[in-house]
Amino acid sequence: MGRWGVALGPQVIKQVHERMVKIAHEKGVTDGRRMRVDTTVVETNVIIQPTQVCLGDGVRVLTRTMKKITKIAGEVGAKLRDRSRSVKLRVLDIARAARSKAKQSQEKLKRAYGQLLNSTSRVVGQAKRFSARSAQGPSGQPTSSSNSCWTNCGTNSMRWCRSCGR
Image 1 (tube, rainbow, N blue to C red):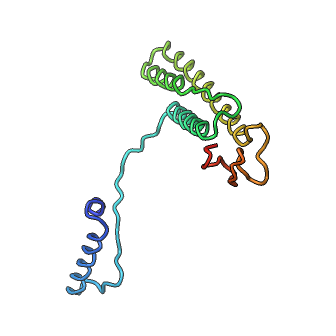
Image 2: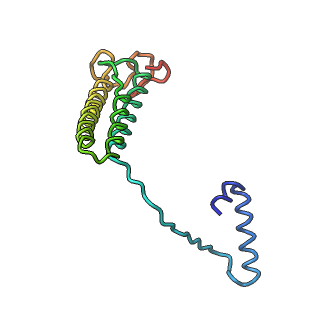
Image 3: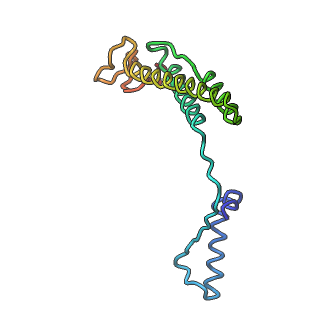
């Protein structure tokens, strides 16, 4: 019924249910006051993502968010450095090294993990600094308590003004 609901739409499904209840009431199977729905649970394998994939996803999300904020608010403080490419390459290096059982590959794996952790910690640090600087106005001072737009376009907003784009 789940796929049918999407394919047919809510009105058709409601009509089908009403018809089923009417038939069941006529045959004396039910009173037609309440309907109980039972579901089935299906066992499936859960895929646990490796650590390097989770770190890569975190870097990708942080970088994407900082880029969006930079686009909205303009450059505030230090310039955004995109490390997503180097992180992606480290994740691929780890995946390649993990497949091999040779001792040389294990050393390469440790080195790649170290580089990935270093890049990830730099992105997290950059995001913290970026967040602190973004909370301040363009002059470097915290925004005023009146919550007015940084560019004084007349709007009152704690965030960037939508009308002037800052």
